[in-house]
Image (cartoon, rainbow, N blue to C red; front, top):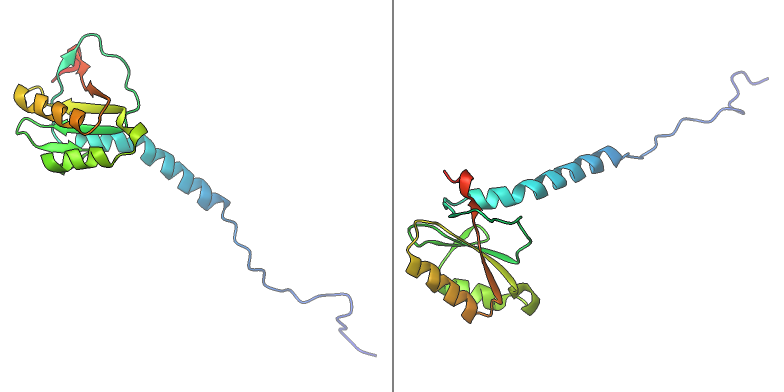
Length: 140
């Protein structure tokens, strides 16, 4: 007679399963947080005081954002760039993406610089250039 027979029992085996559902949830929440906060980070990366406008409408979707500070420095989507590079970047955009360009020009920037930037954008194929403003009562 055999004592302690293992006839009905099985040895426990290690299972190599990992539950990634909580990890995926955390990653998706972080992605959403960064997507919401990214536009604010881009606009706050350079100091531009936008002019006020009493009839400001809601923000729309723009294919490219160009900034001009009071010293004449140009920013494309939050990154400093040269005037010659601005025209190259606009020309490199595919045709449908040239339709809506937002120009955030500092209210203290020389008017001639603003007109020059608009002219550069038009020469590069921009169809519509929108001026960025803030509500008149919210200007610093």
